[in-house]
Amino acid sequence: MTEEHSNASVLWQKARDLIRKKVPDHVYMQWFAAIVPIRMEDRKIILGVPDDLFASWLTDNYQDYLCEGLEEAAGGEIAFDFETGHQADYPKDDLPREKSNPVQISWEDEDAGEIKVKPLRQENAPNCLPSYTFDNFIVGEENRYAYSAALTAAQNPGQFNPLYIYGSTGMGKTHLLQAVANAVYKNNPNTVVRYVTCETFLNSYLDSLRTHSTFKSHFEFRNHFREVDLLLIDDVHQLGGKDQIQEEFFNTFNTLYNAGKQIILTSDKQPSEIRGLEARLVSRFESGVTTQITSPTTFETRLSILQSEQKDQLVKLSPDVIHYVAERISSSIRTLKGALMRLVAYSSMLGRPVPMDEAEGILADMLDKEAETRKVSIDRIQQVVAEYFNLRVTDLTGSKRPKNIAEPRMMAMYFARELTEFSLVDIGNAFGGRNHATVLHAVSQVKTMCEKDDTFRRNMTAVKRKIQG
Ligand code: ADP
Ligand code: MG
Image (cartoon, rainbow, N blue to C red; front, top):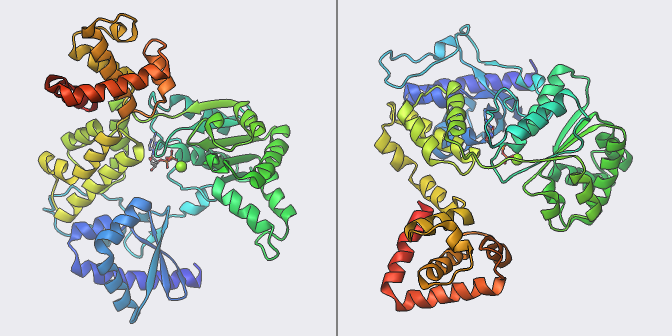
């Protein structure tokens, strides 16, 4: 153990004993016992926590206890910071003392004594979270193909080259990318697997051009990224519009590609949709396997994710609350995990299980956001409108013009414009190949009718509610 670490360890043990006297047992177990001392940096202690959510919850809710405990233990002012990716082994003397504690808490049976830091950082690939593994990745319809492609890339590097995974935020792209890195590294630590975010790549590049850079020369920077077996770059949409780095990236890409080295890229868009990305890079990115991860649309996927998260959590929620979360939160896996984390935290603070009706209140703002961001498709709009007016979807997309069809059709076009991101041309196409002027006309007609006709306006409100419901 280094001196830095041992100082941090001594200070933290003192502080957590002081904190323990002030907070309820279950709060201590859920939050403070899970912290591991990492090192000292001048008058600052670095505390290891599992992830960002955990860190922000601690800061928002228990900062005062932490500050007081640390300052009392240090005998003066002391700052702290969190480092994610650590898990504590719970020592035996940390078991909850009240046997009757209503919150179900489980723990690992470990020897008594000082907190042990699992050597997580030695098992995972550099810059990667140890929990981002294939084992921890729940496979569903939404990500099955991306998962298999990533697994293949880890097992047979170079076969799918490049592998390009895209999808919006919180879908599991970073998790999959780091799972590849961790798997390859675990299998053979001598394999050089380099995981970086596009931003880090960019900053390292700019840094390498400076005289006093971390890289002794630009040449060293190049080798850092070119002398590798696998290069994994997260969020490459950030290359858009940055010409100088695109040149460098293009050369790195070619060097590795020609040597048959695996390249995996993630992005929030398809290559051709990244604004300001050179055509030659678009075609390179598209030349291998491109796969999308969509939002967790199936209830089963969402439920499995929650259940798997719960396995590692001390506080267990009731099955009906878990079902409720799985039913109501579907915009992204990050949000899903955030909702679970919030309920666990409440349960921990209250020292009792959270019943269904309370869960709804606790998650109120998240549920509102879900309703807002729930993507509405043109298909859905057409189905709802057709059903409401007792028509078939083909009536809306067809060419007949009687009033009983024309008005609902215009209404559907109006909603497609108002509630989706699709262009006028896309909307026209979805309505049987009508041109964009027809869509614009429909939108303005609907506005006029809303002003003049009360029944029409009431119908509009009812349909909108159904679409968003
Ligand atoms: P992205 O990079 O697409 O924005 P992340 O990889 O950061 O998303 O995922 C957000 C959170 O959701 C992370 O905590 C990650 O572990 C979790 N997650 C995403 N997909 C899955 C999955 N299929 N199974 C388990 N956890 C997942
Ligand atoms: Mg990411």
